[in-house]
Length: 298
Image: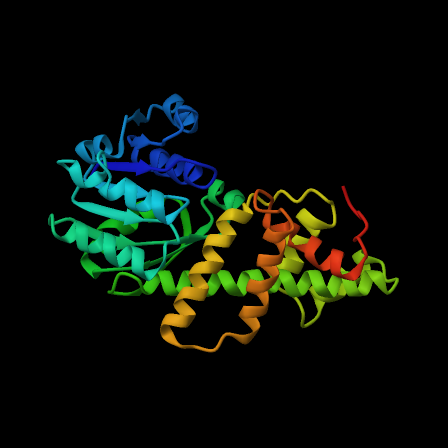
């Protein structure tokens, strides 16, 4: 099957590049022409619209940043539904169960199969082909698409045969990740304000029971060096946190700890960090504590 890829921004570009390396051909589209330049240099075919991608590829991947862009790529005037060759559509974004159900219905009405495959791992791991894919949908569709997913993923987890199940797993993973970061920031600020060298505190966290991804990666690589550049835009985090809240309310599941994380993220937005990086959530804790973590590494 010939593949197409829509949405080649910071996370989509490495995914598409890895597919191109494996398949040796790929048709791509992004609303920003500059985002496809590197792929064109690798001999990818550049399309002028999602429809053109769907006219030239049997399986089309979409990595969109928002629910609005997700719907537009599928059902817009030049969306993939207007294409003539696409047989399978693969969503790589975190869109929530409602949006993917709506898109699945629209695709199904035209006889097009869908696989829901949100990704997790971040930009650096995407370039290394080391991300994780959570996927759900008809098993026979997954079996056909899996080789493409393996082009950019270290781990591919098939979690069920229903569209939306992968969204629930991804969204619950996200809120756990955000919570790890918030609690790590609170713990580090507390220790440092009390006079402890942040590096010594971090060494204890990472050899003790408090160890998590935030202590292993985010604190040392993006916060203690004051770079705040983990390439996780706060406006995308806002969307993901809002989806968590919607799903928790829909399923009537208590989320007391996660709610505290959600409100901390909302505080970051209220502080003007909408265009900032997720790692800057530490500024919420610093402001409340009237203390700024010192820079301890380059």
